[in-house]
Length: 236
Image 1 (cartoon, rainbow, N blue to C red):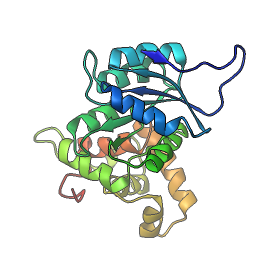
Image 2: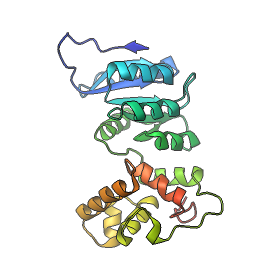
Image 3: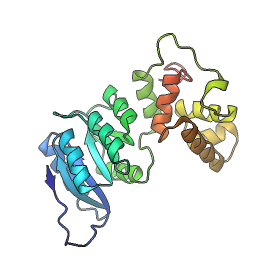
Image 4: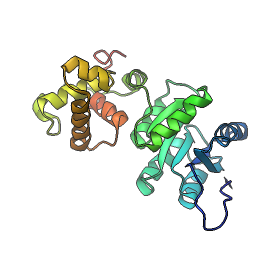
């Protein structure tokens, strides 16, 4: 574990505080070199496995952890779950070598705010960290839907739940949830239902609360697990 938070005593380092966790030294250094020149970021430390990432996060209190999924000792999924439990204000952006990886869904379920493949551009990485820091899911809706429809399944033999058995959602909220899970973004949902964008956002906030999910990624996972949508209806 290495800390780069070397600001003067009593001062607060500017920018989004980022911890980088990856078992490959070249990847850690490369990510750090990408982010460090941008004054909107402050790379506060690096970790080479999930256990070190959890320890470093508790010590350094980063805003965002850029977390590799596959690491020794404790993998990124386990580390994400532990951070979500003990440091909920610390947001996790998961990284994967492959954009279709069952571990990514596990990380989202564990509490990650999104994921990126490792071949993204520096601009995409920076934008994703800002998005995660703002509390939004960073996974593109259609990529999220394709990923989850591949790896998430409702229980064997489970029938799609009736509208009356969806956590207290109203029929319109169920429809918004269904459209969200089939890959539409907020603007597309508004167009499909002929309602305003602000109304869609209000519905989504209500859906998150009633389903007890944190963000869009977990809401989509819940839709597939409940049987509300399937790989076939989700377009995956």
